[in-house]
Length: 292
Ligand code: PMP
Image (cartoon, rainbow, N blue to C red; front, side, top):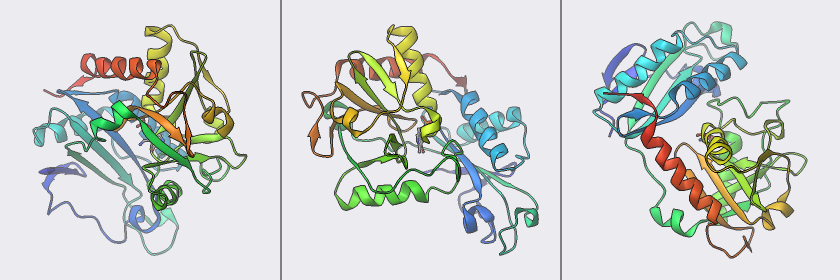
């Protein structure tokens, strides 16, 4: 359990880490966040996570009261204070305390907090056997309304999809965009492999610019010499894929073997997926900003 929480420049106890009920992050989901991993004393792709945080903040016209360098130090300080070498870091910036109206101009100062804790991993069995998915009726937010590239505190769109999957006793949902193209899962990006080519939906379909997505594309191209395409595809392509997998900071690379009751290929995690899983884990050991 997290012992020390970073809150607006100070490391405080869990009990002291309190935020006003008038914070617009709570009242309206008005804020941004990041989920970051540390592996054996190194923070994986920290600068990419910070770039995304600051871009999300800019997109919602929220000025983060720390420079990226200061934020990097705060993340490392929080990991050290919790004596964590490996773990998960949740970094949150809210619009801050305001009144009951929507207007962010009435919020004086953003609140910044960082929680570092042990990571709750998916059971190892799922990585060996693969995951089952179901497509749900809730469509991914349209980019013209709330761009899914903004990693905001408002996750209702994803939560609604997760509820639908849960009602069918499924661990995860595939979300389509309003035109019926595959977008992503509730907290992970999605890839298919067909004839040894990797395909993942482009940003304009309405997906988060996942750091793991980017890392996997890099591994596939540079270490495995594979072709990777960012192209739209439908459920038809999912059902007829040779392989399918999800990517995310918490999940890393996780195979998918069944979607909407259709078995994917032979129903076992694919060869390329297994190689990517291995290569990704290898990379997490060899790079990252040092904590100690
Ligand atoms: N899509 C959504 C909706 C997410 O919330 C996340 C992060 N949990 C991802 C994709 C994966 O992004 P990343 O690889 O940066 O964790």
